[in-house]
Each structure stands twice: as C-alpha cells, then as structure tokens.
Length: 168
Image (cartoon, rainbow, N blue to C red; front, side, top):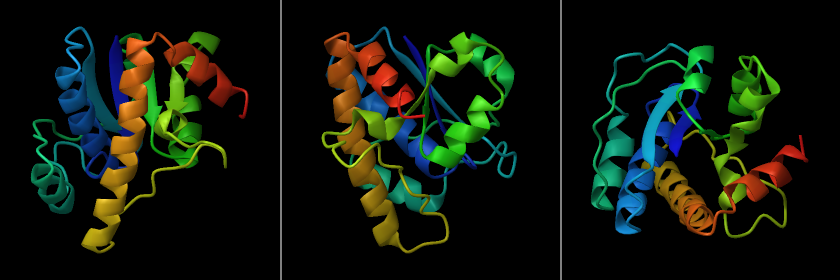
C-alpha cells in the first residue's frame, strides 16, 4: 500500500502525519506500506517541516526526512490512499481527481480516529498558533494513525473509506 498525507502547505500537519505513520507502521511490522506527504498549495515547496512540528514530533520519537511538495493530479497514479487533514484539503484534492477511482482514494485522516460519533473530525491547522496547537495536532494524528494501522492490519481501510465517502 502507498499512502500520501496531504494538508495545505505540507509543513505542519501532513509531514507530522507522515512521520507518525512511518513510525507506527514500522512498529507494527507493516514494511510493505510506503508513506509520503504533500500540500495543496505551493507556498512552501522545498521547505523542511515547520520548526514546531519538528520539535513536538521529535519529543515523541518521530523523525523527519521529507521536504514540502505540492499535490498534483499525477500523484493519484503513485498512491493507493490520499489522507487529507481537513474538509478544505479534501475539496482541493477532489478537484484534481480525474476519475471516480481517484476520488475513491481520498479519505480524511480523522475517519480512522477512535471516536467518530460526532462525524469525521478535521485535523486543525496549527500554523501561526502556539505550541499547544501542535501538541493537540499530534494527539489527534496519533489517535487516527493508530486506527489506520489497525484498519490496515484488519483489512478494513476500504470499509472505513467507504463510510466516510458516504458522508460527502
């Protein structure tokens, strides 16, 4: 499986989700899953993740190696699952979908969270906010990533994605 995490600028949420996913997939022994990240905008192409994302992530044991890139339609050819951080990212990525198969690959990360009783929660953008926003971001990402890893192990990714798609 090939996964791409996507947020707006690819310097806060999506590289954090990428790093958390890589770490938790390795812990679970899921070596056949690859993870990358991108942003819907070109604001930070070539940049490293935001210093607050790195600081909080490293304090939790995550490593960062990627640089920001912009999501383009051709990325659909390279991945099986596009995990977007919020509904705005979802709209932007879906606007680039060329086929129903591309659309089916797009799922909000929050769909994999433990509690979706109030609907699929967005991962809010912490850019420009204090450190506490990055802490909350990581807490939310870790919860959803744990659910995603379990869904991969249980072969339930498609089922969860379909449930989220039904809410569109």
